[in-house]
Image (cartoon, rainbow, N blue to C red; front, side):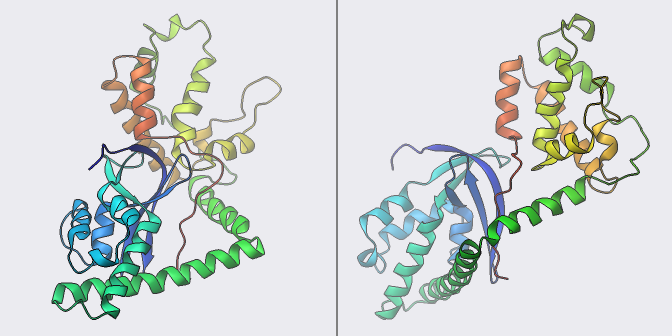
Length: 291
């Protein structure tokens, strides 16, 4: 096996194909991956994701497998960013190619054990599911609906996070320790040592609202713009919903403070932050379903 390549995942989600759930990732360079554990589970294999490589030496499947597929199965990438710990991932098309190999072997009647038959049944379910998902994607692209679909999904997220007027009454949401840790990790002894206190607002936007969910920072800035005085009419967190947005913010704050505690300087903090809680843009990468 060659040295594994590491890629940062910017988006993650679960793709449901019938009874099969695939953990999916999209990297920052736009490549689509499926986790190794999902790969094994998807074709009915038992065990961890590394078991996929064993299929390359399977005497029944080997004659149907080209060199490119064999190489891909033996060399997953390591995905980081949207996972608690790094995971092995395979390009999405690798699973489709593997299913074709299994079904070709079944057609030639070389799959005869209980395990072989299970592989083929799972592969058939996947191939049929891919066909349904594929036609949905093609229709969306042909009609331009994929843009509307993305906007609708983004609107649904914003609806969960951000409330309309009237805004929530102010209560203390950012704990004092957050501000102490923030100033310290940025290299200052105290808030009073800041030459430009306005930087704190930029830090909060970068560390909190840019990483809370897709489109949140932009939506909050539009709903709560700066007034002629340079100040905003209210705090951003007062516009968050109490049942979803506010709890998500508090959980995010706890994660950020933990990263601050284990960072010795601003550079290390930024590195850990970008890995554990990467920024979102104002658009949304969507998983496809079968509807």
